[in-house]
Image 1 (cartoon, rainbow, N blue to C red):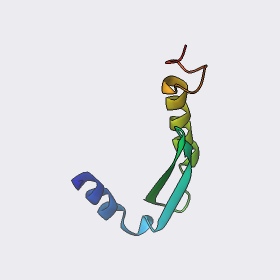
Image 2: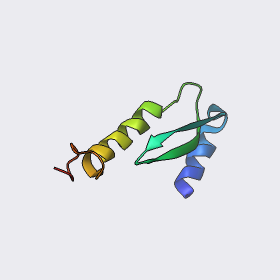
Image 3: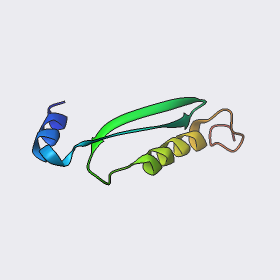
Length: 68
């Protein structure tokens, strides 16, 4: 918590945009809201993490690691 406070304090005026992204994941949906600079959209990276989790741990996908 302290680290987040220090980061936000140090960046000050650079973090003015509130970014909200959402999408499907693990049979439900997610919503993430964060402060970012002008060109900081991490949707592709977050979606990539959820895809990797699904490919490993999904019991609904026949090709997942856990289902094989």
